[in-house]
Length: 99
Image 1 (cartoon, rainbow, N blue to C red):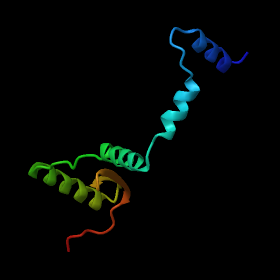
Image 2: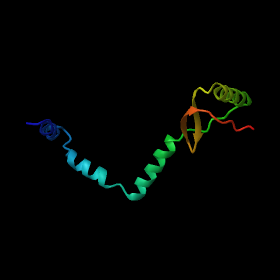
Image 3: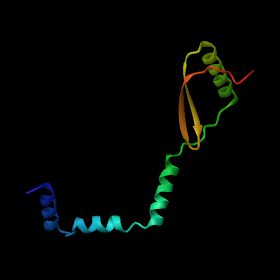
Image 4: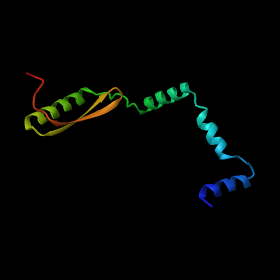
């Protein structure tokens, strides 16, 4: 007797005879396409990171760190926010935007 058969036998002996196969069948097949779309939208909204609010001190610190990475030609990892998620870029800064 497999684990599944033992599980179904226990269900049959219980006080509340519920066939789990029926619950599984109706639980998944009752999803309308509108519900699936709404659930996808909800999960994408939950995954979104809020845009960080930077102060003047943060901008000065970032500027100094980028300037140091540019002058030393060191390996740099930059974390930036775009469309609700953080994107990481890694490399060597070879060209300054200021001229």
